[in-house]
Image (cartoon, rainbow, N blue to C red; front, side):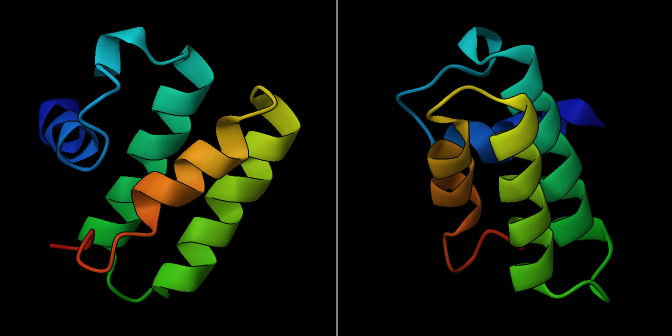
Length: 78
């Protein structure tokens, strides 16, 4: 399952190889992408906000901005 999610991460953050992302950032992105792609009942804005808040608490100084950038693409649900 995570291979498909990693493909999406690579598509929207090509300069950042998934294997080089921190475990925290990678996990938050995978979880949030799963929500966005496979649970359409969750509003996109809510899923992104939850991911950004988790990144602020558990990630590095730049994690929240990076995660918001990856998840904020208009067609990331597809």
